[in-house]
Image 1: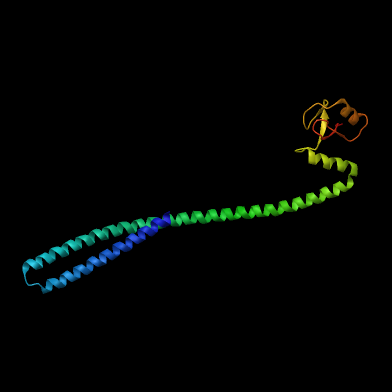
Image 2: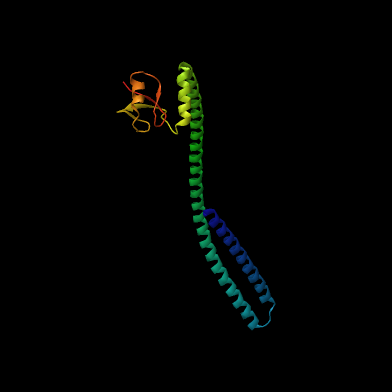
Length: 188
């Protein structure tokens, strides 16, 4: 916006300059005509016309000075705005670079975690992995394993049957909640 104002003022200044030059040319022509006239009335009429043109030139020059002052102000405003824009661009560029760096670090972390998961899965019994994989597909959201607290599954917060509690406590078997399907255990 500051740049547009600046350009508009520059255009106005150019127009004023052309008008002033045009009036000066008219004055020069009128002075030449004064030299050619023979009657005093014609000479006075031309002198009056020249005075009017000079008055118009004075007005245009005053307006031009005001316009030049406004141009200076608009230029300063545009330079300040450009500086702020440049600073903002640098800030955004820095933030973009930080996000790109974070993205690369995150990719490395994900790769490392995938490798750790793979290594850990190799250490776990196949039967348990099969049940865990089935539970992770059936249950809508984690956790896929939940401790039993007061005969309630802490995943779905519903009471489980006595058979489930018995299976976990006495038989120490891999057992699923009969409500939500999560693998349940008792913390000791």
